[in-house]
Image (cartoon, rainbow, N blue to C red; front, side):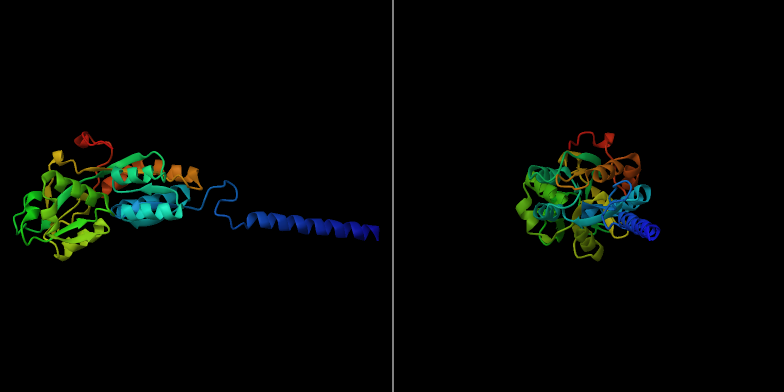
Length: 272
């Protein structure tokens, strides 16, 4: 009887140990059971950066085994969402002015820099209206598409440029679209519903648009920053992602999509 009791106790002990091992191996936590590495991070990204950032997310996941979930939108909308939810790990807007806004609100840490957003004037193919500069945007009857000043970094920069030229009010009379993202402006140009616009050079469609360079002294070129949110719950993975984006490998992906990468002597006069 004693022998049987000992056997029963031993059997029960084995079952309990097996159950504990199974529990340890079958956790539903969002991290790897041996390294503590999260299965994914959440990134707030400017909509104009969707192509390079999508490729970077795939490359990062393949290399590190960490998924990347994105929220692509205008920078102003992203800042509002971060402020409201205080969730997410990384912020990469279209330019440093929007990053500073987020920083002033205590939403993000110090940035690193990736590439340049280089705005250009685009007109319909063949330039049928003979537009040569932003001063031509004031012509009566011209249809202009621009990024929203409250939602896009490039839209805000455009308004400063028009103010510098003393033409903001006259340009605004011709604006037929203020896109919540710069992608909406690109669509308007592709569809022919706008005569001219200002977009970044990486978004130019050579089949439907001609390009007019903006003078460097107009200072419209933006540096693209990236950094951790102040409320990330997985700072190690988030920092690893930022380091990947700003690495030679990450910058090469931006270059593939038409972005000059930071730093570039051609834009030495552009400060973050």
